Image 1 (cartoon, rainbow, N blue to C red):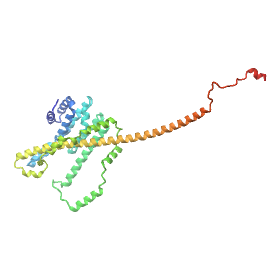
Image 2 (cartoon, rainbow, N blue to C red):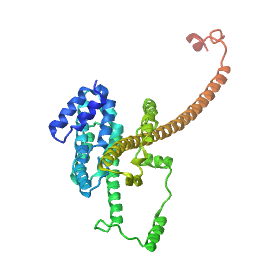
Image 3 (cartoon, rainbow, N blue to C red):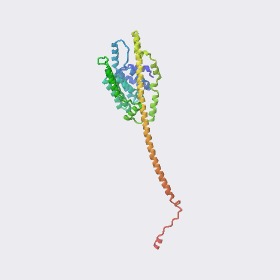
Image 4 (cartoon, one colour):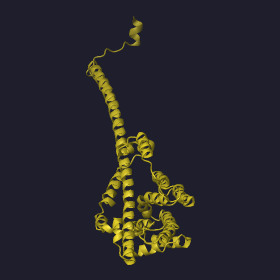
Length: 365
């Protein structure tokens, strides 16, 4: 048995080197009976890791000097590869040994892919993530529906990154200074935005549209039941984490209280507290995003199942009507046979049939 603290230590020592990835992969495979715990810690440490380690945290800090902020931010943004590398290695080895990790990693991968891609503007890293998804597709590690979901998450991550960059560009003038906004231009742009706004589809309408564009195979009853059972232990019902979040002190969320800091030690303590809260919230958000995708897929699966049952009912009704018509024809034929039987002699064996004339009788005439 491996403890969660041991797993955290192992993940904290992970680097992007091949030896580091393979060593950790072998360690995890040795403890694959604890795959659910391992995947949970992997997701938790992923959101607290830096860019290079994630792919292969961006942590917010409270500090006094601009140089300190810059150095920490640059350091955190230079990592992010190792976590996806080790997941890829474990998943591919596990495919041949039972598939526990293949199954347990799947709910987390879509959120992880979007999380990683949306935080880094690096074509090489994006290409790496895309290549890993392609390998899973080529080697049939996951079903086509799961691969399609991962590709969609990748595109959503790219769009989110581009959207965040556009927002930053709109708020600054290229020199790091915020633009002055003209009230008239603001109202004009707002009116344009209102004219472009379309009615937002409901969740049911979105699922119907998605099912029409990307139909799924007819789900088996056991698959539907299994999916619903897995959602019973969803992150949204995790009372322990919700209590931890509710118990966080107000200092981690109210920046106005920063002025009450008296010395560097208090600032350092508050920084550690904020960093812990950030890791807790981001890991929980990652799990909630994964749950949302699972619930959407479950809704899509249920809708697909209902539609399949409707089609089956329609087919069975037509089949029933067809056989009713055939039965009616058979009843008509049976009535005709019964009517014909009544016109036949009752006892053929006792009928008095006159004998046929002999040859002599014929020539005698």
